[in-house]
Image 1 (cartoon, one colour):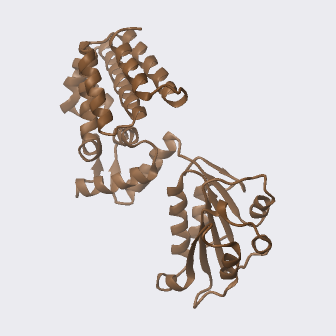
Image 2 (spheres, rainbow, N blue to C red; image 1 turned 180 degrees about the vertical axis):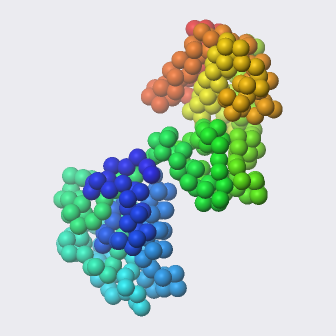
Image 3 (cartoon, one colour; image 1 turned 135 degrees about the vertical axis):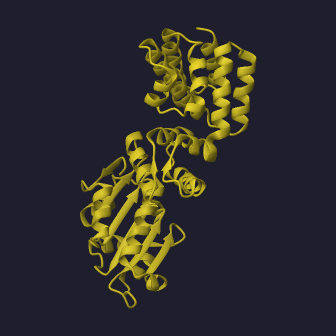
Length: 338
């Protein structure tokens, strides 16, 4: 399911399968930047381990360092109420006070308690980490790769008995980045928007999440194609004023230039607009505008622009220059070869 470095060679999908079968570990440690995945698994464990009517009695949640390790151990050793097991969730585990009590518990965990530890980071050099790895399940959760994220989006859409086109998935990824929380929030909005319609398409994504930004990117492309530098810079400022992330602007422009490059290649082998629309899975409503924009660039120039966008993407991720300067330079170079 995700980009996972699992300490016990267990994938997230395998862990979920075990949880679904109610095969629980007495201790789980989930850590990493993708907290949404962690929360999904925590909720699944609670759902499968404890009867909903008994959650108030058998699910306890703590935050470190507000709660000390002795309190957590005392709770973990207590007997479940009217249930075979109880669940204890400890968040910000990296801030816990390291005590003999917690170490002893992790070495000899209660079999009637599922202790779930959640952390942003973990120090593997500490001996307590080896204890956790030996007696529990330890999994690092990082951002999903693009293909993994695509599968995750499709699965979430399928939960609503709907499908989503490949181009719609790509657009959702480009517009929202790799935050699962943001993407899931938009999936809920999109599903509500399409109503009884069974397939989510590119135009639905545009309408619900990215219409304004996508429209402005399209307008920015027109200005770049027409060589209108001052107006293009103004449009860029408008996108930034909308709190559009600079890296997203570059990604959307890159996606747009790649589409134009593909269209140019299809035109070279005499495909007509209708065929290009079908091959590229572009809404027929937009194909004329894409065709018109592609005519303003040669194949060579489109390839140069794509390289410029790659360089800008790298600069935004690694150079200490103000991002506005990087983007201004990019627009100037896209309009006039450097």
